[in-house]
Length: 116
Length: 114
Image (cartoon, rainbow over all chains, first blue to last red; front, top):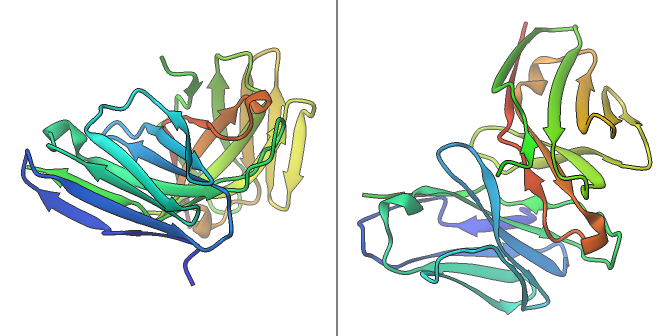
């Protein structure tokens, strides 16, 4: 029973297309994230949502639009795909406390996006 | 601007010996540090963490050491086992801002030689 699941695991598409990656967590966590791991292996945060509210947006192009229909789901839609968008995208979730909370992140398996 | 650095992309260690993975950080506001382990085609999984009020945290075969003055932390695995072969990511956060944002290093690939 997967705690954080994301689909699809692999996605190959042409430049200019629009695609979505879906993420669901069954841990009852309040906070969900999208991280991007690029070709240099940097794992960088893109977005964070807490109870459907956007709390982190890390200078990501407007072509990337996260959507959180409820606190168990955080989807990522990408418009007008570019070659540089090729990466592995990881969804994650965590409990969220207040100041000083140090809840660990639980990651999904990743979605490898290849833009041709 | 790489605030968390893992300067060794790879490390090979004989089974049964000690594995030492290193991590350096530049942001003095970081006060909580974590190590994640990642197998191929899987997401990173939490391994061990340490708060800046401590200089050591131990969990079974895994120990993390923190040297705040040097802005350096290390993960020790002893004894190393074949199942420890994976990529290890160091991560840091400034908990005064909550746990929303972890900054990761680029990872060290550990290979345990049987």
